[in-house]
Every structure is written in structure tokens, then in C-alpha cells.
Length: 468
Image (tube, rainbow, N blue to C red; front, side, top):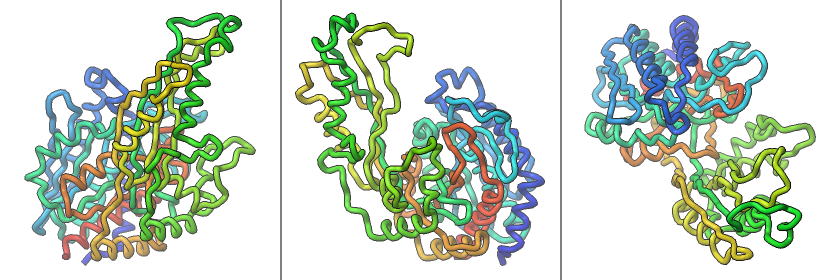
């Protein structure tokens, strides 16, 4: 019989004695995802990460353990850790070991590749997103075996291209389809949390479309004193074009068909999340003094983040630095990132966006919008009764509060891949990217007391699944 109180104590001991030190060593490896590191194969950091994780797993006192590094052509490797159980069937655990690049300076005293503990936080790139995942999964299995609680065979998939859109994952899932046929449960550990006081599950993801808007008017630049008001500035034309798809006063996207009806169960989840989070919905933003969020209502902000479309300019080319001369520039290229509601047709809307931007260009300018990526949004299927009950019991046992469900504003392609490859298998999607976690940003940190609770939660899920 699974003992929740003992599991929490075991989890604390495991993180203190067996899990924290190797996680810190993992954090020292600059295994940047291949989409941001074209020389990743030659650099060897991804391979080094996979080998480190594999070697550590082989040292664990886990019965039925088998470790394999899969390779396929020029793709990133995949770490497959299998723990054979006594109960018939298979459970899949997912995490990733690749990391985001370091684009901005970290706070004084912190370094992205030198993990440092300060109080309840462990700072370092890739620890919260999502290096802790393998260690939590192995910790959960050790808890079960220490309590002599039976479980199904658990297959842990650790991929190394997630931060690049999981581009290599489908090839490996195809190879594993027969081995992983109809898993009874899929546990994914790469999502967000509204706070560190509740167990948070992920109910939906927004879709995303990325592309490059290029506006050209001249073959070369021209003295601004001669050209201004003779030829339209390409930045102004760009701004005019963007007004066709976004209300610049409110941020509302005005592409026809972009708005969707939000299911009532998702609205109920958002209301509960807004009540739990309050102003913390926006207080995690690194706002400058005097800057306000786009609404004072936490529910409106959560709706904006999870079920409404939004546009961000993530890059600009063709504009020199502040030492540039007085020149009317011949072109401007803007990298656009458009988020869509989970149930919106992202592909159709991006095609429509291209039509709107390129139609009847102002002043006859050469306007081209080139799509670079489109990812469809996703909404989680209803959890079976046993899994909903297990999540609720785990939340009360380890967090002392009701479980909460929150949609994510980002797009995590592997979640839909898992749904497509294993239709009908229930998904338990959670993570530790809560306030201050700063995934993808400076000063990324992992909340250690919460990872202890989450590890115990996974152990209970696996025990409850095996008893069915």
C-alpha cells in the first residue's frame, strides 16, 4: 500500500542525498538546443549530456533498470530509460535535456553554467526547463521500490531537440510505437505552474505562427535629407501593414476568424486559477517602475495569455545601430510571432495573415511575408476519473490544497505529438515553471521544495495507475 506521508519524506531524502548533486552537474553542461547551436554535433555538448544522464541512471539502485541512448542519422540522440514493473502494461514519462541559449546577462553573482543554490532556489540554465524531469522520474520509481509498491513498466523518454520544436522526436516515436503501444498513462514534466503552493496541471496550449515580413522600396539607401517625404520610410510602411492585423491601441488581433468560443470547463478552470493567483498573474513580469499590465483583472490577463491571439515582434533587421548615418533605409525586415487560441486553425489563419499583409502594398512597396513555422494549438482531453481523483488526492496530500488547471500561453509541440501517437492514453502534464522560474530568460531557477512534492506526486500517480 502506497504511503503518501512516507513518500514525501523519502522524496526529501532522495533529493538531498541522490538527486540534487547530479542535477547540478547536468546544469554545468552547455547543451544548447540544435536550433540555436548549428555546430551542436561538433561541439559535443548534447551527446555529453545524454551520456552523463545515462551513466548516472546506471548507478541507481532500481530493479529492472535498462538504459539506452538511441541515435538516428544526423538527429540529436534520445535517452531511453526503462524500468520493468510487475504489473502488466506501460507508462511513459517525458522530459528533455536540451537547453535554451543565454541571450542576456544574468544577475551579479549568478552564472547560467554554474548552478548556485540560494535559499529554496537553484539557479542555472535548463534546471527548471526541464533538466529536473529525469531526476524526478527516477526519484519517483525509487520511492515506489523502497515502499515495495508495484508499478507498471515505466519507459522514460528524454529528448534533446524540444527547445527547437521537438524536430527529432517524431522519428524516435515512430521507432518506439510498437514498444510503447497504448500506454496506460503519459506523464509530461515540461510545463508551467501558477504558483508553488498548488499542484498545477496544463489544460491547453496556444498555437503559434512565425514569419518574416520584408518591406523594400529602393535598391540602396539614400541621404535622408533628400529622400524623406519623397520615398516612404519602410518602418512606417511596416507599421501600416501591421495595423491591418492588430489594433495597436489594444493589442487585439483583427484577422477574420481569429476569435474562438472558449469551452465552459476551460473558463471555470481559468476563473479558479485567477482566484488562486490574483495579481501574481502579472507580478512575475520584470516591469519597470510605473509600467502597468494590459488589464487590472487577473482573469482578463489569463484569458489574454491562454485563449486569445497576440502578436509580438521578436526581431528586426535592416536597422543600423545608434551610430548609423542620416540615411533613408531601403528595407526593413521584421520577425513576427503570432499566438493563436488552442482550438483556432493556426495554419489557415497564418495563410490569411500572409494574404492581408501582402495585398495592395502602400506606395507599391515590395512586401513579402515568409512563413517559417506554424504549430497548431492544443487542448487536453478530459482526464479519466481515476486520474482526476489521483491528482486531487496528490494535491491535498503533498501541497495541502486543491489541484488547479491552467492553460499555457506558449506552444509545446511534443504534447500534441504525444496525443497523436498515443490516442486514448491519458495525459498528466505538469511542470515547475512558476513565478521566478524565468525559463528562456536570465536567472532561470528551480524551486526545490516544489520539486520534492512533485516527485512524490509522480510516485503516487504510478502507484494508483498500477492498482487499476
